[in-house]
Image (cartoon, rainbow, N blue to C red; front, side, top):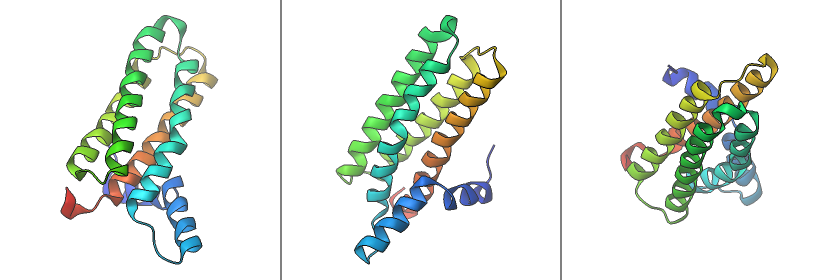
Length: 142
């Protein structure tokens, strides 16, 4: 389980933090966390497809089912961010993404160590970005 200090360190090196810094540099005003969150969700979406390709063919139906849940939650989170919807709903979707990705890792049945490492890295990348968004959601909104 990650501690808040681990999440903070991950957030500082995440794509999310880099997008936010770049938008701030370009527009001379810090972007709302919403703009960075939307860009980050767009960035990590293709990584989710990678996971299906890495899974053992025998586990593909279960992995595909979980990935569809992840994609659905990502799409819903993006809509909530775009429409400035309620933060508790967004937080729920983001936690669902992390939980479903953890299940994917558990059920993927990858026998090849190199492929298993690629899956772990891909899941960790997505989870780091989702955690960075979670840290940016205003506490007062949750």
